[in-house]
Amino acid sequence: MASTDIGIDLGTANIIITLGNKGIVVNEPSVVAYDKKKQCVLAVGDEAYKMLGRTPEYIVAVKPLKDGVVSDNEMTEAMLIAFIKKVIGRIVKPRIILCVPSSVTDVEKRAVVEAALSAGARKVYLIEEPIAALIGAGIDISKPNGTMVVDIGGGTVDIAVVSFNGIVKSASLKLAGNRFDSAIVKGVTQKYKILIGDKTAENAKKEIATVYNPTGKNKITVKGRHLIKGLPESIEISDKDIYEFLIDEVTEIVDKIKGVFEQTPPELVGDILTSGIILTGGGALLKGLPELISKTLGAPCYVADDPIECVAKGVQKAFKHADELLDGFEKISLYRYK
Image 1 (tube, rainbow, N blue to C red):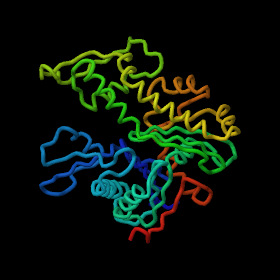
Image 2 (tube, helix red, strand yellow):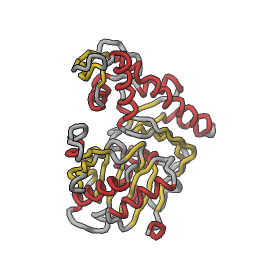
Image 3 (cartoon, rainbow, N blue to C red):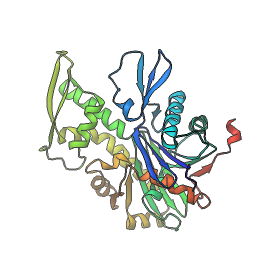
Image 4 (tube, helix red, strand yellow):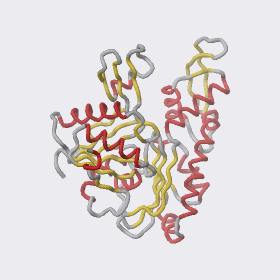
């Protein structure tokens, strides 16, 4: 592995970048602040995230990725160029591995590759999130044993059964961490007639949310604007409230996992009943989720060590496995994009 090899987990919520053998060198929000008057990028990552919802009209703080794929090519390019300059410190032409959802289309794939090329890539590889997640979790996927991974990111849920270096069955759902936040905002609005921000919802989710046997004892105060009075107001919500807001979204994820099980060969299902379902991604940290999945599906379920950085670690290790992976890993022919 060259010292300038770059692995990028281009997530809807966060961008995580690895460099050579140094490991993770960037873990910041996937946000760009752009000045429309001067037509230039003001900030990316943490600095840009602080500007969300707090800027004048001519400065826009945007998330250029939606549901795990590029929704704004220009802003994604600007973000990648800024981060690559930040980690390398000089303009070189690195090899880049980009992580994409398993359901990515050719059009979405092209947008990601073109963004990497504009950022100065010499060679571009794509790896699917479930493969990267398992490699990052330290699972040996080269054996003919079934392993199931559920990667819950900010924009997508990727579910895959992997055996013998290849994906046997997979499914993707455009529902994840960001949808959880939106569901909390919607729930508080409908139940209490108070409009709260996405950051407030995310904080409530991290602090007290549980999707398995909530007690109602864990509470948090949230602040927002009363929709009828039009004035600032704060209320206390409990883990039972948040359970009520989130359970439909979580049930959709569990049903999707069940659908993948139904299509998986019985021998591999037997392996999964022994080894369990591995949860990765930031959404895996939602309290009670492993217990709910395990109870509903009858298979053991556990959260990988360091689930948020799991995919990025797998992307870094993928350079060593380039010749072994049968599926979910692709070397892009750059002439197709020139």
